[in-house]
Length: 250
Ligand code: SF4
Image (tube, rainbow, N blue to C red):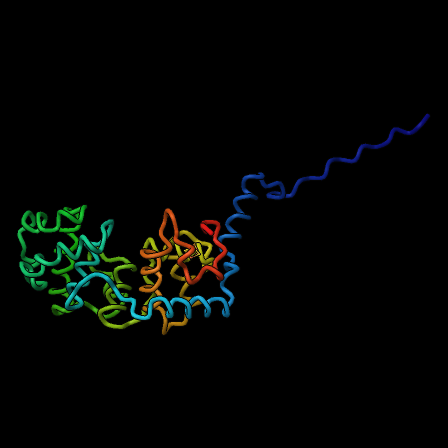
């Protein structure tokens, strides 16, 4: 009689060894996102910066302003609104409300009507009045000069902080990441992230600090004039030979 072959007991699965497929895919996709974009080779980045200098040597912030305070207010108003519309509103706004005192002590309903064309006017009124009060009470009437301090103002996040510190004071604390910088950084493969905070960190690692302010202006100009969201004008783009975006139209 043949001896009964002993069945090997099934090997105990180590806890966590059989991850569901979905979890593995999610992990792989996260790893791909956190990996550095292939386009961040220093020579390529330098070539992109040179092309931007060539195309936009005088790029600057398109929000009209006479001082840091006006730029702060206009930047708050520019959320979900065009710079052109904000500039139209600003023409009369700063005549009626020329300084932080005037904004801080404004009648909210009157201010709301002034800034109504920029949209979200109730929230924006709260932000500009709150920021003006904080500037008076905490910062001696001056827009603060550090990111840490400027972020304490109501309605101010890193994007606004970077616009004001960079444009009004020439202080490079970071890189403005608005909708254009977000889109173009991805198209140019300078980041693989979608979150503005992560995009800013990625850009700060590959763009020399001395170029942070100008780079933001130049990319915003390029996004408005050439690399538009729906139909980028790739035939007119001087970055075309460096760009391998799937959105290219040539
Ligand atoms: S080639 Fe087209 S997609 Fe690429 S940066 Fe230029 S305009 Fe944008």
